[in-house]
Length: 265
Image 1 (cartoon, one colour):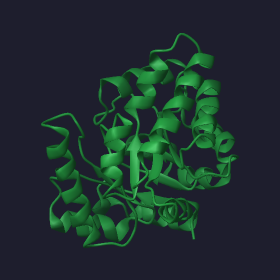
Image 2 (tube, one colour):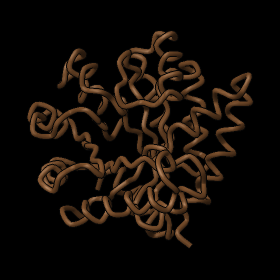
Image 3 (cartoon, one colour):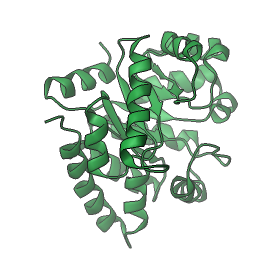
């Protein structure tokens, strides 16, 4: 059983959803991102997604884009990402990277999967890679024992859901904008509906992300999802702090708040 599935099973046995945190590599600094992610994992976060900084982040909101710009300014490339993965994975918790397809393709598909394995990484989320064009990636990840995570949205057709769930090995990333349009109840019902639709096709864990920004929202999502993904809330907390030590303290507090939020009781 992979570290990813162990983390979801542990959360389930404790009557809660798994808490997954996202942070761009190299934000606020390369060393700072390592320290922050280690502290996240020591204070209630179950898995981390390390974002690979990319100059054309189509799916990222303004807060994440600001952090990615800082990471790029800090000259964070894939070599640095792998170093960060290596350091953070020493916590013994599951470390994934989240990358647009272009940086992986430029670096080398086989090389990327191989280096993830060598660095202690366990999975990769590829938000813009169509599953029906992923044969090379499937071969590389299978050979290097790296779990694949693909992203689906409420607009995904049943055919698409079936295709994605057949190619995923880690968890299914259900992207649903929480609290951005409409009231929280309306939006959360869309997310819940999507999770139900995914579960028709797979027994793998389903995690909901994009826009979960408070522990209350995390609690809503934890009622129907196996995992809750939080990104912007952590990035925003770091951006608001004047220095690294205060950023770390803010992230520790936030991690504890979200860890309470994902309890199902």
